[in-house]
Amino acid sequence: MRILLIGAGGQLAEDLHQVLAGEEIATVSHAGLDIGDRAAVELYVQQVRPECVINTAAYNLVDACEDQPQQAFAVNALGPFHLAQAAQGIGATLVHFSTNFVFDGAKGSPYVETDPPRPLSVYAMSKLAGEWFVRQYCERHFLVRTAALYGHAGNRSKGGNFVERMIRLAEEGKPLRVVCDQIVNPTCTHDLAEGIGSLIQTNRYGLYHMVNTGECSWHDFAQEALRLAGLPAEITAVSTQELGAKARRPLYSALDNTALRAIGLPDFRPWQVALADYMRRRHA
Image 1 (cartoon, rainbow, N blue to C red):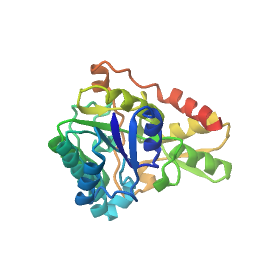
Image 2: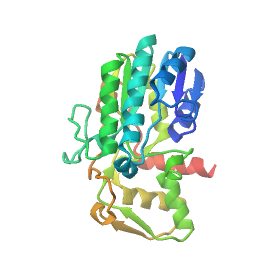
Image 3: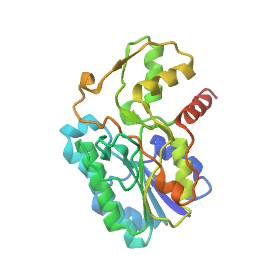
């Protein structure tokens, strides 16, 4: 399969590149293609003519999106719109990633694909708009919601993934304050990439939640990461209100991989198992 992988260099893109190594892959970074530029997207896709376009590009600085809604919508909404139109034009499949943040957290139990979204922030609104564009403009699409990603390539825009930031701060002896009332599914990008590798071999297009199973708070996630790293650091639990972030976040945004199981694909590993594996690979 000829694949165009957009967002090269990011933590998810790096794992996708490894998992899909047996395919014919063309990669492009943000510097090489601004997906907010409709003409550039059309030209690039026409030149490469992939059978599958995988878009990992996103503007995911959640608080910054509140001050920069135009940039958030350019990348997270108009970008997918342009890619959907370009993919549709050549009969290609589009894989696009969205977020657990499209929900408001009021449900109190894991969200399934049929639950109605209700975004609370500019970031979440822009990601939901991107979902709508993909659904409307590309027939052959895999729309994947995921959450709390961490991978070996890190997240450059955030200075490394959450696990690495916690380890670095603990090693430096700096105080750790981590929110304890936001519940998520920590998800390893390696596991997500493997799931995508299986999903694109099917023709079961549509919306999927794809996360490591189980749920925890960010505080619990940090504690487990530092325990596995052998770092006896004290982590102060703080509430979302105490943290005082600019953008509103859902307090409960755990997802359930209902649609994935329904088409017969295996569910993901528990988040604790995936994290332990990540730590072993990290030391290796």
